[in-house]
Image (tube, rainbow, N blue to C red; front, side):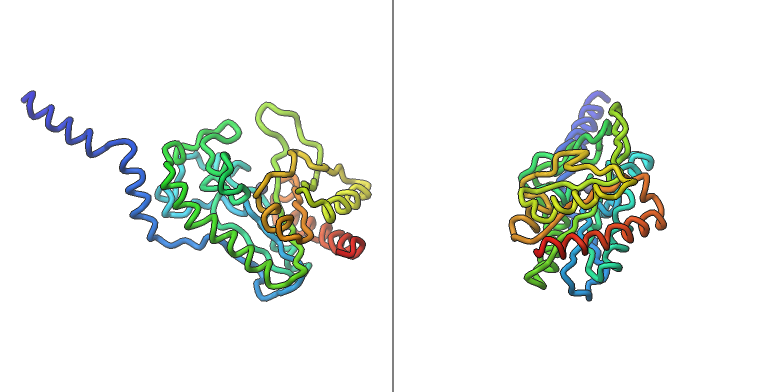
Amino acid sequence: MLTLTVIFALIAYFHFDHNYPICVTAKRSAEMHHEPYITHGPERVTRWLITCDHATNLIPDHINGGCLGLSPEDMERHIAYDVGAAGVSRHLADILHGTAVMANFSRLVIDPNRGEGDPTLLMRLYDGSVVPGNRNACENEKQRRLATLHRPYHNAVASFAERRKDTVIIAIHSFTPKLQGRPHRPWQVAVLHSKDRRFSDPLVKRLMLEPDLVVGDDQPYFGYLPDDSIDRHGRAQNRPHALIEIRNDLIMDDQGQAEWAERLAPILEEVLLKTGL
Ligand SMILES: [Zn+2]
C-alpha cells in the first residue's frame, strides 16, 4: 500500500511540476489567433495619427486561457486599461479625419507603452493588486507575448505613421482620479512630454488658457520614458507628437468621450498651425 502511495506521489510530482507546464501550455496555445490591434478610419490618410496603447482590458484566449486570475472588479479598473481612452481616440480620429490605431490587449498582458527592455513591461503587481497569471511568466512567455501582441501593434503604428512624411502622433491615455492611499488628482487633462517638446509645450500652454481647466504639465507622472510609444514613434522619428492624459471619471461614457474629443480637436489643429511644424 505504501509503495503504491509513493508511486502515485511521484507521478503527481512530475505531472504537476510548477514551472514546466506553464511554458508548454503557452507554446501550444500560441497557435490560437487574436488580432493584436484594431484600427478606426484606416482609409483616412491625413497628418493625424491617433494611438491608444491602453485601449482595452481584453485578455486574449492564448494568454493563460484568457484570464490572468484577477477579479472582474480589478479588470474594470485603470490597472487593466485606460478607461474611456478608446472612445476618445475614435471620436478624435473622426473629427480630425485621421486614423486611430488601438492595442487590442490589456496592458497587464504586456504593456504596449513600454520598451522591450523595460522592467515594467510585464507587471506582477499593480496599484496594490497581484497579477496571478503573470507571477510565473518566464522569459519564453514574455518573448511570446512580445511576438504575438506587442510587436505587431507597434509595427502597425509604424506603418500607418510612415504613410506620410508629416504625420503627427497624438497618444491618448487616461488616468485614475486617485491611486490607493494617495491624494486626489486635481487635473482634468494633462500633457506628458518626451525630450522633443516642439508640439507638446505649445499644446500644454494653450490648454492652460481654458479658464475651466486644471491642466497637468508632465502630471500625474513624469512623461519621458525611453523607448515608450511616443519616444519611439514620435521623437525618434522626428515627428510632431504629444501624449494627452484625461482623467477617467470625465470620459466614462460615450457622451463624455465625444465632448472631450470635440474640445481637443480644434485646439490640436490650432497648435499645429501656430507651431508651423
Ligand atoms: Zn495609458
